[in-house]
Image (tube, rainbow, N blue to C red; front, side):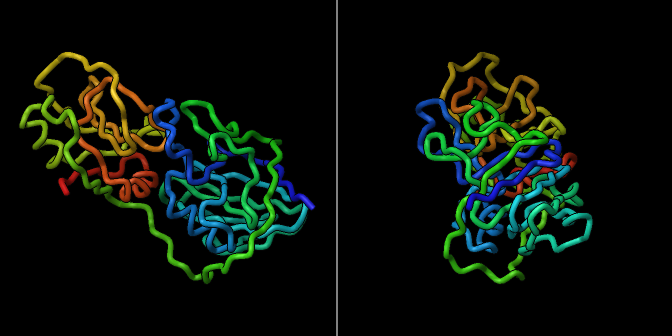
Length: 285
């Protein structure tokens, strides 16, 4: 029997995400996938799913779903209130949702993105090997809308983690380890010093494509423009306003603004949970 989930409340932005589309940048296709991959994997492991089974990634305001048969879900990532038919249930642990009941992941109390995983995973048609929604290219399922119906995959037989597994908390201050990028020589020595000594903050214009920052601009030696060149996950690109932008999973695969540095991929999960106004520091490491 196939289980379906009806979207009762789609929230500000809820998308289907898994491990993403690796290996297609030469075709102009970003990786996409869950921005907070450790949270996705932990939610899945708590249910006995494969670690990279497709989940729902919500943004700030959560979402609500009604299953047509009983399902078990976990809501993790950014902490938020979770209810089933209005009754509080645990966040970050498996919860049984009866047929016809509404499970609601509410607005976050900290962080940005919560993850709703269901036993069996979200069954969405894969494109280039992934079911992830890519906001830049439009590949994968469209962002959820009220009334959409999602299918649930068949549960797999894997050992689930204990319900007490620890979750990483959203950062009070975001520290991003970097290596100098291929165009660091396009910037003044003072700009390189500023990048690694000043405190920036997360801009409200951040999204799945990039974490934008507010703070002191970085001065360039050259005012020319580059031909478009390849961009990697974690690239720190500097647009004309001089404020660094950290490329996240839906980033373009090419760009013409200089890349002053590259953030270590392991630090990007914390970047995905850094709320607007969070202090940001770049450190050479």
